[in-house]
Amino acid sequence: MAKKSSFYHTRWNKLLLNENRAAEVLGVSVQDVQQFDLHGNPLAERVLLLWDRKRLHGEGWERFIFSRGALICGQYRWGPDTLLLWRDQAAEIERLEREIKRLRTWRGLSTVFVNKLVDMTRRDHGRRGL
Image (cartoon, rainbow, N blue to C red; front, side, top):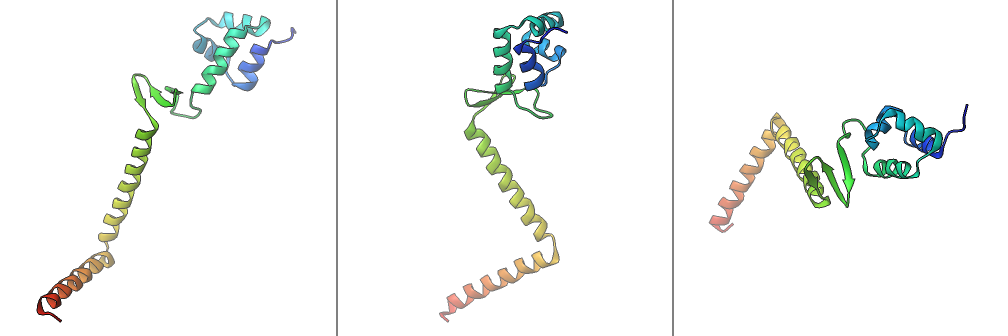
């Protein structure tokens, strides 16, 4: 068996890409990838390493990449400020849902009722000058 090139070790051992996926990423045929495995191709190896730096690892993130500080999927781009805004909005929605859930209990309703009575009493005492 012939010694494998650094392209093969990068493709298989570092990036865990099979021949079909590497061919798809590079835009070449599987036979070309097999040739690169045997004889090497520094340019294709650098392209694979660059591709790996830009892509997001994980299930469901196949079409997303990072480039120039933005998350990109197809024609859509999101910057850090947008992502942080969405995170803050999600936290606010979660807080409001917890509050609604608490208000739907008897204890939550009674707390709201008691607070209303206290406010009304304070306003009434304020009008009388007590």
